[in-house]
View: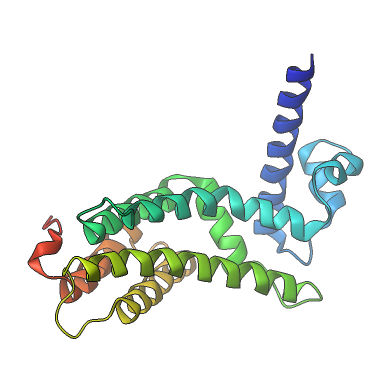
Length: 212
């Protein structure tokens, strides 16, 4: 019985997050209330408060459903035993672009944090979420480049820090362009084209980057 109750609670929590994701995307964070989320999820407001402290807590959980797997994937590229960190990083970015295109939860969560969080009294907390996301992503990209640097896979004069910053800025720009105009920007084609252009300029042949 206890296990069933726990499973039911997890189902309820996921339902609340699905509802919140839809509400945030349609109306923005500032115009979405916990009551609206509860109604859309088909639960009471008390049920929402059972799982989350406030609206920002809900937003953080919506974003975490997407960012945690993404960050875990990036960590793989910098693992100590890895011999091709940049090729591994490229593959993780390719998979991530595909997820944004093919998985609505992923695309919606990114759209919410990038485009649907207006200036309001909650802006400071939203900024903190964005800042944490940027720093966590950059730390993992930088670790992959540092591993490549240690293995002699960066071109002469290239630093891990500068390469990581350049690639991270480029990825962020491509992603935002796709969210703003998905009909004009093909994330998988254009995104990977930009990634390959950048990595090709940064890496030596020893990085063994794919040439597809």
